[in-house]
Image (cartoon, rainbow, N blue to C red):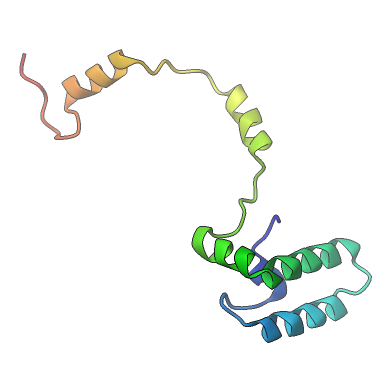
Length: 104
């Protein structure tokens, strides 16, 4: 699912099964003829009809809007930076987590 199912159906999080069904019917009537919108509405209804899926959304939030493959494509274009012990040692010498430079 690409969007928050509560938002797709126009509901507040935590709405009951009757409110979910009523919002599903209302949204389908409002978007009749728009195949993409109807698919989103049906997917949101299917998700919210499942108590386990509702609990998962309540605990972890909706699915991210960006696919991981898109993130990987962007990361491939960025220059690689070394991340070894020397960077950590340099950070510690410059002040580290305490904000005080090491005395050597």
